[in-house]
Amino acid sequence: MRTKQLIPIATIAVFIAHFAGQFLGLYKTLPHFDSLVHFLGGLWVALVIAGFGETRPRFSIVKGGAFFNFLVLVSLTLSIGVFWEFFEFILYKTAFLIHRPPLAQTWPDTLSDLFFDIVGAGFASFLLFFNRHLSNKRQVPSL
Image (tube, rainbow, N blue to C red; front, side, top):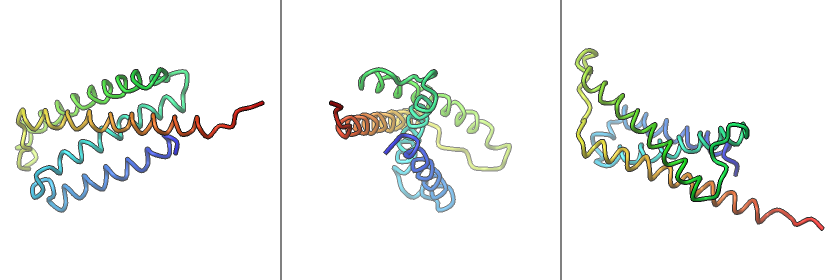
């Protein structure tokens, strides 16, 4: 399965998980539901980064070996996760302006969110490595 085929699956998974969390109250009733959503988000971000490189080889960030790809995907996903946490912090500070209860914004929550972003990116790296390894085995050697 190519990266561009995995991206819609991950997008739908993140959307459904977040929708269920918001409208069914799963963020409040299931203690680790937020971790699942951040895992899926990290997976999605890493797949989008890798997919961008697949469709535009000139701008590909993910060119090296498996360990280098892992470092690049995790680093970029972590960077986006940090920006997301800043967004949540600003939202937390201004939530009273839109009459919604503020988000639980604590250091343990933030660190947990970033950790699961990294785990999601690592899983994406594993999927991409496994996918590349399988596609290399399927190629018939030319004579």
